[in-house]
Image (tube, rainbow, N blue to C red; front, side, top):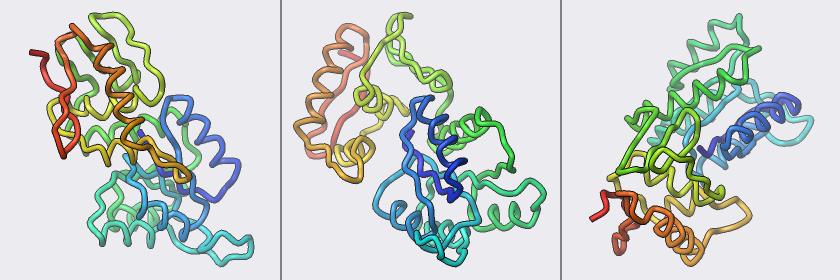
Length: 229
């Protein structure tokens, strides 16, 4: 998953980032309401982890803003990315306000890092209408373990090939555009070109040969994971 983490506390932000990246996710941090709004507009995310108490701008002396304004703005433009709000455990008013503004779930501080990852995974699964596992031919994806197997054996993939196959498998049988794959794999300071993406697809096709699952190119659209003919 690619996750937008909106948290101004440097220590907590670093701890959450390390934990999520250890689980194989890609994390883009934002430290202010302004930065969060900008990143959320220009980059698609699988989920957003949002603290409600934020500086308005990136300056140290910036007045406090409100994470609710970031969420409200996203929902107003029709963005339905799953959002997990972080709140002070004893602030019922914050939880109610977040849910009323469009948050999908909330988690009180302090929290267990394993629960953060589990809740994010559940929100994305619900948004996609998918289960913890998906299978096509001999290819199987266990989302909870973030692991592919082929005929029961682990399928080890480099990080970007893993993310491409994850997108194609969520769920299998749906078209994924080149732009969608490029956005998921690119950073803000880089852009993944068509040649690089096609190279990932080519390598995956070779690894899936004979598995009962194949990647079809949809000209002018993108790619589709389907039963092998």
